[in-house]
Image (cartoon, rainbow, N blue to C red; front, side):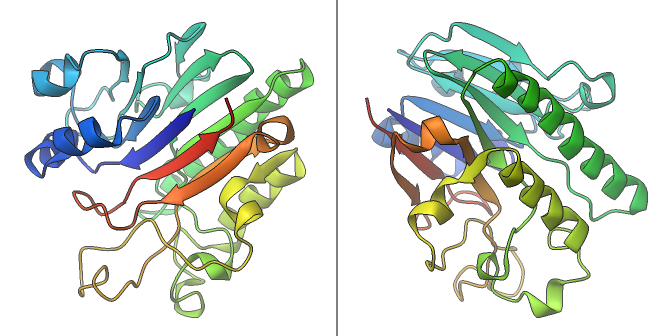
Length: 254
């Protein structure tokens, strides 16, 4: 089973950059998109009517902002938009799909760069989502969380850690939340497989950052240990263009 996540930074813009051809060629079993910035009815039918995929869209109330979509060849046992906390339901940040063996969370975590209020919102989101996942795990479920975490966990996960220590996305308080998820039983699947590998999934559009590979690893698979036993690879497709992020795939046995 192959799950692919991609923050497309606007699905309509990505389609104009060849997204549909990429999707047909990549053909993941499950595709998790973040920052779609559109309602489903605004999107090219070449995507919304892709044969062989069940589709679930959770767009933000605010037009042209945020939003996630999950496209799946496998019919989920259950699907939910959001995780039941009213403060976080209007921005279209979560789709949960249940498959035999695990729950899959497609998540676009908030960005905390704007101001303290927005940073607090981001940290509150981390806390509320973890509480929801804890309850699932306590009930005996396995969980996969994927998407744009908007945080680089360790110094190895961005090109310039020293100069970014006071910037949202690499603040100690944000990084501590990734630690907390790991303390609660999650594993960073990529880092578990590739302890010393330097590879990024996001580059600013400015300063020719991508051509110089001055990037951040912001797109993760945090998985419970039962899922990790079935992980065969995590692939960062940094050769794929079309967004300021690149796709990242999780390959599971079976």
